Length: 286
Image (cartoon, rainbow, N blue to C red):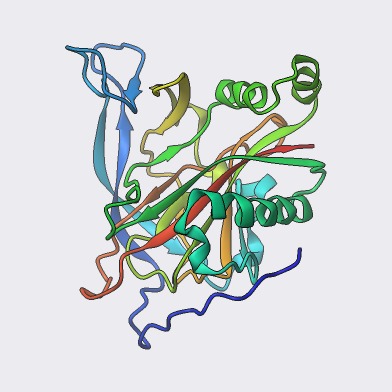
């Protein structure tokens, strides 16, 4: 892809960016005690209905740092992939939705087409800016989750491709939901992102959750804890680094989704800047 002006990376003092293995707490899914189908409201729920009918329990997790091991991980094997020296776009571009869609969307689409084997079309359908210390954006999410069930991914194809015949053709081929997650400023010192290697998480630990939004109802994935899960993070991520996070894959012979969560690192310096990040959610055909 054609790279634009490089972001000026803020330099943290030597030794102030946490590295290496660390013990943290992450919230995990716990099923409704009455055995009901789990649900979550992203809007105001009906009167007398709770915003969610399941619970989340904070549990200790050991995170291994993948810094220096980036080449070991791939989307089809692990459902995540770290990439370096990519997607450098000026920080000012996030100032409005219009500039994000005009500047970032084409760059991310071109980037994914160049990185994802077999991809012939990319449709970005959403993005989220998260700022830990700024109230005008969403905060990092401290709960182990994945963004799409297989059913939700199929529905997303139909939402992104209005023509029924074209959508049916896409559903007959391979389609993936892939998030592009990256810092807006760096290096990240506060509230990094944790992720679990797909092969270490069993299907029984993944719970479909009905997600009621203002315009429609989708499905997200809650993640129950198991001590055999392999959780990791990428220390000190810079603005020219990004994580590809697979949320769904119609090819069931490869890794299909990666659980992930923000976490508090107890080694973070007390004066560290809050995390600022952006994630793009893309439908990848082919």
